[in-house]
Length: 265
Image (tube, rainbow, N blue to C red; front, top):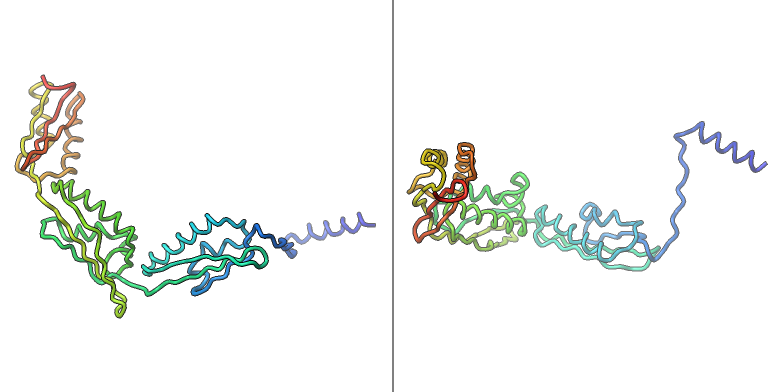
């Protein structure tokens, strides 16, 4: 009789493939997160933590995710956002997530304290992130992304001939009344170097002349690393031999020497 009942249940289930049955609840255990309680915000503010319910409790992982959640809030314009996690006993471990977003800010202005000739629009463009929604006027201020952008901007200064340029960390002034943050960034560009001598050594005379022509660089021009790289690509197409470039920085110029083959002849 029991076998007959089981067979009937199986047949009924097969005839109704869309039928659903209640899930069996997992027993409470101290090893798992039974619930995630959000205080001071909503679960939408910390979705990375909200989904931990039912998972094995891992303190290190939870703290790491809390940091990610706080950074996500900062990326949305809450530069002072903090997320803290404590634990309490319930059905398993209950994570109490306290969200302190702080005021929301947008960038009101970005000022570079410098008089150098680097294009102002290029400086601002170098800071923008996430299609202009971060670290641009009207966008959110995200300090760590701005730090990385300023490192790249410093390298761009170097590539355009300001070999000793330095850029300070931004000074942020928060206006809690308007919800705006104003950024001032000091740039110490220093001397800008021009190209001095451009010569070629090694290989045949005709080859050396072809290399100089392909490089397209002349003494007196501002040094530009991108232009030099493009010239090297052209020159290597002209030379059926190895081609290397040496640079010598003098007090007021950068001398360039193209080496054809194994060395000078």
